[in-house]
Amino acid sequence: MTTFSLLATRAARPALALLGLSVGLAGCQADIDAPSASPGPLDFTSYVAVGNSLTAGYSDGGLYNEAQATSYPALLAQQFNTTGKGPVSFVQPAFSASKKDGSGYIQLRTVNGTLTPVPATAANNYLGEQIAYTGNRLPLPNATPPGSGAQELEAYAGVQPDNLGVPGISVLSADQTAALTGSAAADASLRGAARIYGNLNNFYQRLLPAADRGSKDYVTYIGQKTPTFFTCWMGNNDVLTYATNGGVFDAANPFSGLTDTTSFGRGYRNILGTISKNGTVKGAVANIPAVANIPYFRTVTVAAVAAAFKAANAASPGVFIQTSSTTTPVRLATSADLLTLTAQAAVATGQGSTPSNPLPNQLVLDADEQAAVLARTTQLNNIIAKTALRFKVPVVDMNTFFTSVGTTGVVANGVNNTTTFASGNIFSLDGVHPTPRGYALVANEWIRVINNYYGSTIQPVNPTSYRAVLFP
Image 1 (cartoon, one colour):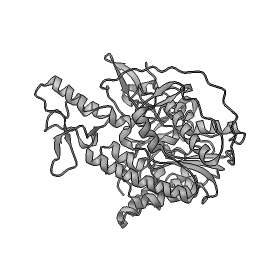
Image 2 (spheres, rainbow, N blue to C red; image 1 turned 30 degrees about the vertical axis):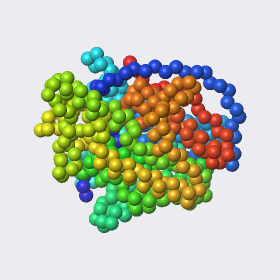
Image 3 (cartoon, rainbow, N blue to C red; image 1 turned 90 degrees about the horizontal axis):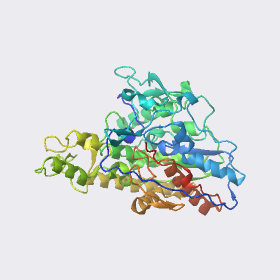
Image 4 (cartoon, rainbow, N blue to C red; image 1 turned 120 degrees about the horizontal axis):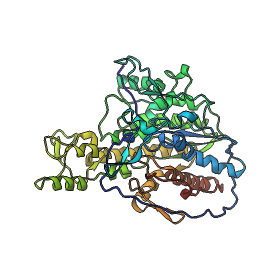
C-alpha cells in the first residue's frame, strides 16, 4: 500500500510576510435584549455536529481549545439551549489544560519591522504555545521509514464528543464503501485508506479508542451517536485539498484529487443516512463554498507580484508560472490566474521572475484549474441538495453566503466584516478558516435557515462579541 500522510489542509502553514497587509480595527455595540426563543417542533437535547475542520473550529492553521470553544456547533448549542429544549452540555474534544494549544497555530508577529503571520513549528518552539504533540508518529502501515506518519496528538480521553468535526476529512475518506471510480484497483486502495483513516489523520486518531484507530471509518464512528438534532457540513475537502495544492494531485495523499460524483454521492448518502437514522432525526446540512473566493487565493495577486518584480528589474515582463498544460508548461501569469497565500515565500526568493525559475504549479490555481474546481463544486452541491431533499432536511447555502460576503461583506451591529486577509475580521491567518467572529457569522446563517424551515425562533449570536485576528 502506498505510504502517505494527511494534513488538515494545504493552507495550514503559510510562512510569509504579506504584500500590503493593513491593520483594521473594528468597534462593537452593546447587545440588544433579544425576544424569547422557541424550539418550535425541534428537540436539541442531544445535538450532534458532523463535519470537517470548519465544524471542529479549526482556525489560524490549527486546532486549539480557544478555537474549539467558538466553533459554530458550540455557538449553535449555546443558542439552542436558550429555547428550553437545548443540550444540558455540548461535549467538544478539547485538549488537556496543559496542552490547550493543541496542534499549534499561526500568530501575527513583527519580523524585521513587518507584520508577518508566523506558523508554529519546532524551529520556533511553537511560538511558546502549549502544544499537544506526543513526540510519536502515526503508525502508517508499510511505512518507509517506519514512523513517518503525521505527528501524533494527545488522545482525547472523554466520552464520545458531540462535535464530531475532523480537520482534513472528506466524504471520500469518511466512508470505506464510497469509492466507485470505475477502477477496481483505485477503489480498493481508497476504501482501504478510508477504513484505516484513524492511522492517517492525527485529528481523527485522537478521537478513537486505540483498538479502533486502524479499522473504524468515520461513517461507522458517527453512527454510534443517537442525536435528536444534527448538523452536517461535509464535502469541502473533496475540492479544497486539490485547489489549495494548486490543482495538483498529491501522490502522497489518495484523497487529494477532485472527488468523482459517483463516489461522492454514495458517501454523502451514507453519511446523511447514518446520522439522521435514515431520515427519522431532524437536522440541517450545508453545501460547499466556492473556494476561489477565500483569502488564500485573493491575497497574493499576480499584479502585486509583477509590480514587485518590475521594481527590482525594469525589464521584468511579469510573473512566470508552471502549469499542468503539456503545450505551455511555463507561461506568463494573467489576472485570471490565482496565486496561493503560500506563494509569497517563493516570490521572496525570486521564484517566478524568470521562465527558468517559474512559480511551481502547486502555488498557482490557473484559470483552467479554477474552472474544473468550480464545475465539480457545482456538481457536488447538486448532490448535497438532492440528498437533503431525500432526507427532508434544509440546506444552508454557504456557497451563496460566502460569495455574497466576498462581494459586499456582511454588517453585524454596525461593523462591516469582509474577506480581506487578516484585517477583514472573518477569516483567520490561514486564509481558509474563519476567526471566532467568522464562525459566529456562520452560526447565524445556520440559525436563519433552521428557523425558516422548521418555524423555530432561535436567536442569533452577536458576532461582535467574538474576536477577529489578534494583532500584536
